[in-house]
Length: 133
Image 1 (cartoon, rainbow, N blue to C red):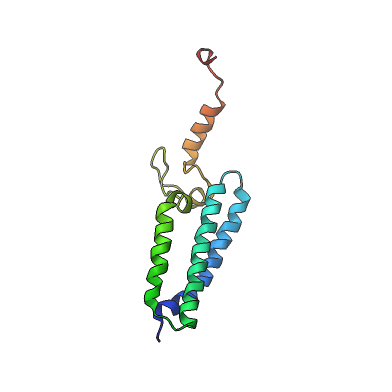
Image 2 (tube, rainbow, N blue to C red):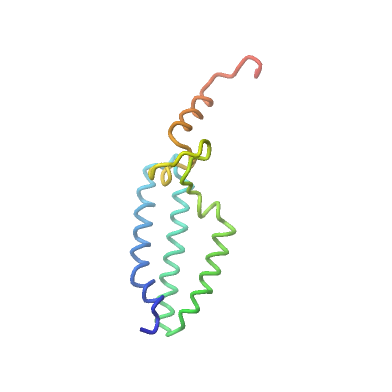
């Protein structure tokens, strides 16, 4: 086996790409509150698909797997520079630090737990005081 890493990428990353797109399609139901995260999964899917094509190209032209380091560097720089765009997911509530369930991690842009989101909604809905007028 001349290309162990490229063969692994070509064998499995297509399915990873499809799985990410399925998550992206489920995020469409939450358009109003998951727009940033939907675009993030789309960008991640594009990176995975380009890696799949790059691995296939390395095998096709019988190039060394060391050329994957070029892609890793470029992808790492892209994700590093645009990390807020590529990685808007948080496992913990940004307000209280509670662990977020999967649906909040993937489908809510505000990264707040349900309790903190309810408190924020109460503050937004409260009438302005007389001193604010």
